[in-house]
Figure 1 (cartoon, each protein chain N blue to C red):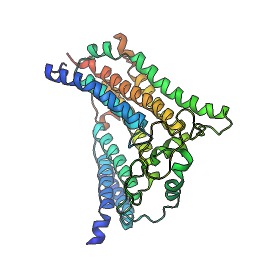
Figure 2 (cartoon, each protein chain N blue to C red):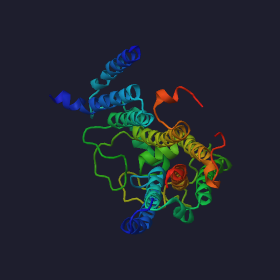
Figure 3 (cartoon, chains in turn orange, purple, green):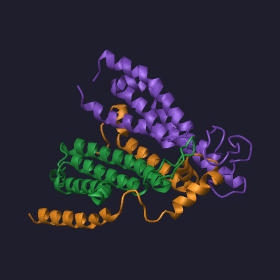
Figure 4 (cartoon, each protein chain N blue to C red):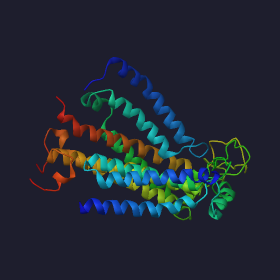
Length: 94
Length: 155
Length: 117
């Protein structure tokens, strides 16, 4: 009972906090200095037509390396979880 | 768990087209909407189509886990080596040292709206191919591993 | 009325986030909890894309582009990152759910909590 009450209070608080987001107006962003810079100079600096790709792979290339590593680690984890079943054995912790 | 002949034939027919379209999305990543992640996901969709239409035993003959692991590791290594290569050319890590030099993938682009050429972008197409290979291998491996987890429960 | 129409995407984001959070808080089935988490992820992606939209703008790609203002590219790049990491974490969590089901025979979190062997 107390847990349910706590959950309801949490939901109401989160909803009240998120209602602030509805003050933003759709289609008219407040600040866009960085994005204007990328649109104006991105093609000149990287030679790539697709500005999103130029950000993902050039301006933020190190971030993308980390992202690829996250994907690699997730595949490694999934593979480790099901590794014993290929040789017909059960899990080693069973 | 075997699908009917119609499903299997359709999956077989669609599989190469999925792969080719994924490769197109990967290689045109710097010109049109798309890129390594999206193209890799499209290619993995093709293999997922193949996987859901067949049993696990049949599928391991066609998609080898060793090849997929190699594919994934090779993609990540390509990314890392391309980044390290720019250190050797006196640029920062992952610095774009190939673009607009006139060499391989380095044609000079005209600024503003243009038809686009595959031969531009410098390091970006190489990184796209690396990431596309990695996402393709990774997502297919995830599906295969999870399928191997449920195959014991089926009669 | 116009103001409500302009705020409609943000209202959608708020509703989706609250639905996802509610599913995570009130459901006892592990798969449904993961679905709530995925719903919240999608809501955050939608928020990022919606923030970066400009009125009557075109996609930020210069290949044969019609003239006009371009949408903001940075938030789209961040959304791309977020989607891939979401896929990776979803696969990881679903595999954990499968392993838990094999071990306990149920995906109810209250029964898994008992830690019986």
